[in-house]
Image (cartoon, rainbow, N blue to C red):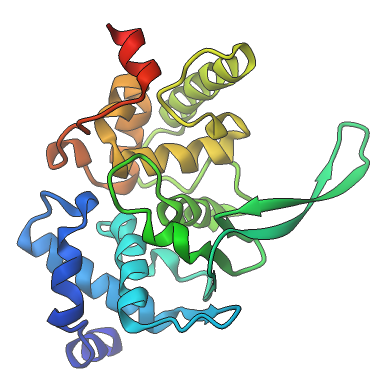
Length: 261
């Protein structure tokens, strides 16, 4: 098989790989899981065209930092989970993207957004390198996981928070879990009530799925404490259980601490 042949001849060097195995979000992965992660990351770099912008010299260490984070969500989904898109565009920092939105009257409104990442339905994924570098620290934020969750969501069309589910998963359970979380997040956003989960998740169901995917891999205890049914659905979807390997984050926001105590 070509993929096995290529991987055997083009592994990521230990010089590049070993320092990255200390990433906080990789804590607790077994030797076998790290070996598979390394192979998926190598194949990711082989099959994706990475286009730096604005004079960035995108070095091999930088490429591997990106690839390791991209590989983690598909560790148990297989090499082909990202095979329906090909290009990544890297900006030095957050970038401006034009937006087009249709209102309830059918009118189109154009504007601009400053973004750390964007998964485009027409193909490429855009990242701010600064935010990619800051992502893997188990703080609940990860632009790589967020945008690639959108890409998984797009495998059955436009992103809507309803990605293709595995055999044996019940769409009714998925809908119930995420509908409950989304309604609660919208309520918190509307009333100003504190939310342990980033309220960007209240934007629409697609962002709810992407934000919850970030938290699932970065701070799984928080997601399980807040929306346990969502955690269970993501555990089935990603075929991983990060709670079993990641410690609780040892800090929280001031609001979180005061509300708990």
